[in-house]
Amino acid sequence: MKQLFVDTAAWMAMADGRDPLHEACREIRDGWLKAGGVLVTSDYVLDETLTLIRMRLGIDAAEKWWDQLASSSRLKQERVNFERAEKARNWFFKWRDKSFSFTDCTSFVVMKELRINKALTSDTHFVQAGFEILP
Image 1 (tube, helix red, strand yellow):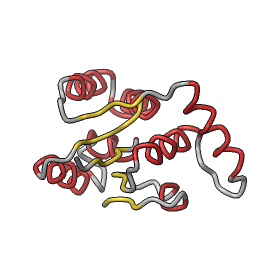
Image 2 (cartoon, rainbow, N blue to C red):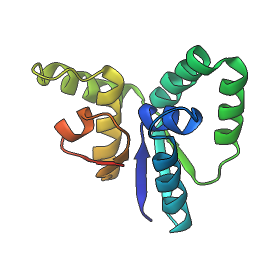
Image 3 (cartoon, rainbow, N blue to C red):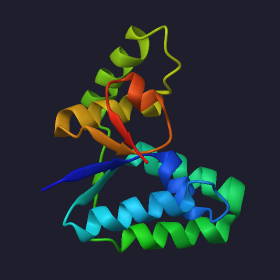
Image 4 (tube, one colour):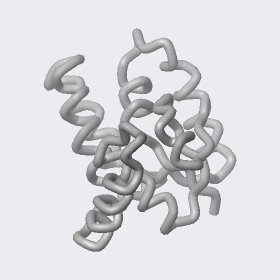
């Protein structure tokens, strides 16, 4: 089963019709699902995205987005447990020359563990960490 990690930047782009990457991200998501793939994200990314949508688009948009995700059978939500958080902390402090957020580092850990090499995002930190990004 092909898995694609979805980061906050892509979730936000898909939620906001004014985002320059709105259509591109939606097309990639839809094409991935049509080809039988699965979308993967983490609880940290969902937390970050829900908050951003509320702040930028309002509470109604945040609720609509959450309801859509909750009803999706093709979205795999990974939890960042204590072990993953510790691995992310190590990554966070190891790469002092990068400006990775802690949430970025948790995403990298999940992707490495699940052997996912592609992320739907515009965040170039994923490229710096050795992953391919779409679009």
